[in-house]
Image (cartoon, rainbow, N blue to C red; front, side, top):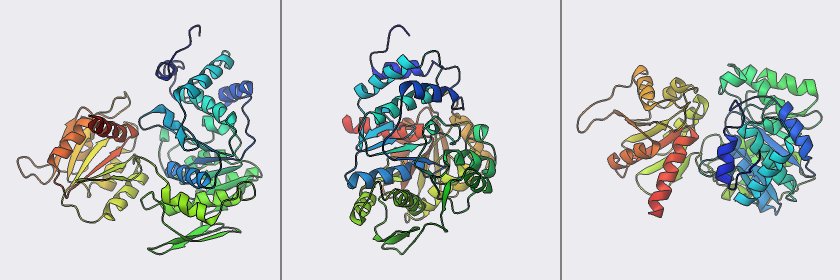
Length: 434
């Protein structure tokens, strides 16, 4: 490359076109460039993979460690609105300047190695963290585990939150195949935590084959609780009288337990007190994960885009109390199990506002409408219709329509792809700015 891009936006535009494939699984190319860049960590590294619950678990780990006064780097993907969200240092997104400096360094060292957008940006953020004098680094796996770019780093503790069916074209179409891919982040002689109450045999076998120190939910760590508070029990540590995490939803105690197991495994290197755990869980924040916005009608944002996550969303909606009508703003990628998502939620939704999304691999709103009809949802027409299906050119226009029709006691659930939730968040942000 002769001329380097000047801005973060220019860099990201360039990176989208640099590699012939958007997703190109494998660690050889990333590993080569990692070695040239000399990326290594002197502090503990926690890598978190899993089908669902990764983001929540990472957010809880970050919040607790920050409360304990540690300098923390957190890498997550994808972002909702700004790319900078992917790299957080001490709870703050990295600046454009910090990122563009690292992009230039990766470009200078990659030689002739072709990298995808995800691989290039992952290496840049890893190098940023390695140079930032951190006490702890938390890395969220992008896709799978074994062949994901994040897995070029050997984690001190690896967490698999859950194993379910998603990304079948890359990871396989059974829990056993997917479990093997997720278990690829485990390392010999190091702590491997599985928060899934029913782990696939392939994950157990792989952990044993490589000699990882496997912690299983229900055997090595667990939780108990009532409506007021809960307790964590691990191999050698108990944490009692904990408040519920600020993240709402059915699986958050499983995620919180896995996070506390990771901290227990690191307790000699990163000691954390009881009050710091309590405060961290109380203040943790994760946009777009069963996020209930203030005001009326009630608006729920949730990036549920596979059947496992949709089942959790359905359970969370049931726990919210009565709303006369529920509107859905829904957009999804074509390669997702759309039928499975609809099946879990169709009995909870009265009015569907379906959105086109700005990506070639997105399912069109018309395609989603046909899926709803195939699932036996029969819309009514005319004023006072109790069930409806409408299509829109964007999440923002779909949301505007839902807002205009919903009564103040109704609710609007925005779910599906990250792009669906991001489109509505951006629309709300520009409303406030206006």
